[in-house]
Amino acid sequence: MMIKNYRIPGLTAVAFLLISTIAGAAEARWTFDGDIHNNSLAVSPDEKTAVASYSERSDVVVYDLAAGKVRKVMKGYVTPRNALFSPDGKAIFLSDSSLGVVKKISTGTLDVAATLPLGPGAFGTAISRDGQRLYVNNEAASTLSVYDLTHDRPIAVVTGFAQPRQGIKISPDGKTVYVTNFKGDKITLVDAVTGDIRGEITGFSKLRAISVSADGRTLYAANSGSNTIAVVDTQKHVITATIPVGQDPYGAALTPDNRYVYSGNLGDNSLSVIDTAAGKVVSTVTGLDAPRQAIVFNKDGTRAWVLNKDLSIAVVDLKKNRVIDTIKSPPQT
Image 1 (cartoon, rainbow, N blue to C red):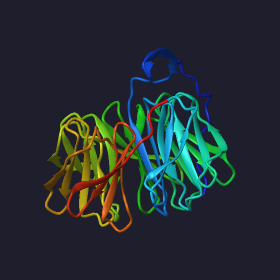
Image 2 (cartoon, helix red, strand yellow):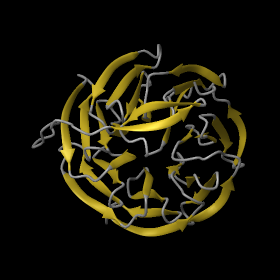
Image 3 (cartoon, rainbow, N blue to C red):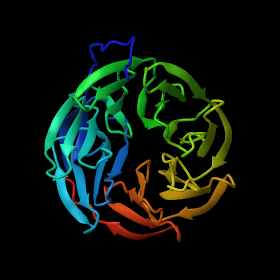
Image 4 (cartoon, rainbow, N blue to C red):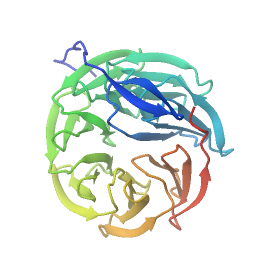
């Protein structure tokens, strides 16, 4: 497989100084895009390890899920954006938009194995099912970078986007990459093999997280501007319905059986539970603190891990749709 007709341009951007207050003391914090806030939660394939980050914090927390406690706090980040595991669970990929890199971290030792340079703005990430390719949104350059993970080298940079941020997903058949564009409120469809842009879907309102159904025919997208989840026909490239949810939805996470979509509602600290067949909200989960798109389900679909603002992890029973436990986070340092 080869991506053709693309070059790797020099990535340049102008950083700015954000003055923030950390642990009660004012200090200068150099960020590229500190006015953009998001969190991220990744769970290993064996469901033993979780990685949590929030772009307002320079530390990233690794949890031992079996023990229900912190395994390690990784420091040295500025605006960590997205974490994900390789399909075999041996590596963690963590993007930082201010450092302009994606770090490849050994799950076993938590040491950095490689650093992939992308330039300021490295944001959302997705990995192919075979673990050979990493796709990275660059919000600053409005590009999609493609990395060959077998050789730890860039393959191409695809242009034609408008502030791609957190939202990026690969279709179940591995043929299409769905990239959200915050500017213009649209989703761009990219051929995963050639890098060609195949079309776009418009009509969103402050587009946030997306999920794609197992058959690849339906996409769900969070509209934080209209407090809805959009239902999209991926074959026709049109929104077929919008479903009202809670306030300021960021999440649109499909359960493993595709029967429900969970919307993380930042504005009212809740999850809206959508029955995909009925096309409506059937339950609401409360007791959360500013949930966003960081919602991960276990394989058998009995529980979800949801990240709170303080990087604690709420454990949600999906049958009862209520929080049954919270894994405490370490204090911010």
